Amino acid sequence: ITDQDEIIAPVSNAIIEIGNERYTLNINWQEDSNDTNYYLIKKQMPDGEFRLIAETTDHYFIDDDYLVPNVNYNYQILAVYDDIESTTVEVSAVENRGLSGDTDKNDIIDGRDIENLARAYGSEYGEENYNLLVDSNYDGIIDGNDLIDIGSNFALTY
Image 1 (tube, rainbow, N blue to C red):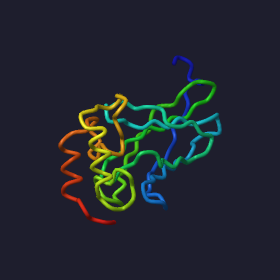
Image 2 (image 1 turned 60 degrees about the horizontal axis):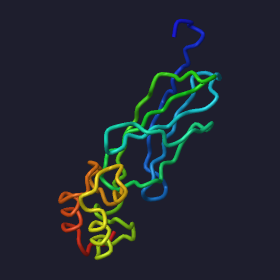
Image 3 (image 1 turned 135 degrees about the vertical axis):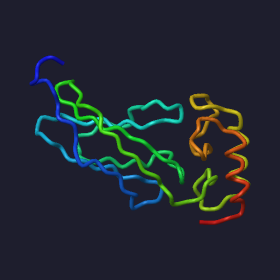
């Protein structure tokens, strides 16, 4: 960008708080100028890439989509004005409520969780059988590490 007038101020005071509902993260920020049409929210996926998950005119976003406990989630927030994006502001947080391995979020590790793991076992992020809720360590592969979470928490309730 060569014209100084085309630089968009990034958001400020971006924070993430644990949501009121379990398996939710609330992302909040402030706008430093009145020249924003909307905001883009990107989330880092298991393959390391940031993917667009929301476009909003609000100064907040609630992520309640496929969150599992004890995973560090990274987000980027960009202000947009006339199709020009600001620099990226990054925030991260961990949703620590719930049980690792509770693939159906029913608050108990049981046979259903093992069945969900079996259906996705060996799949990688982006493949048809891959399931974000089964990938308890968010590494992009449904494997023995995810089985360990189910096994070590088996029969526990939240």
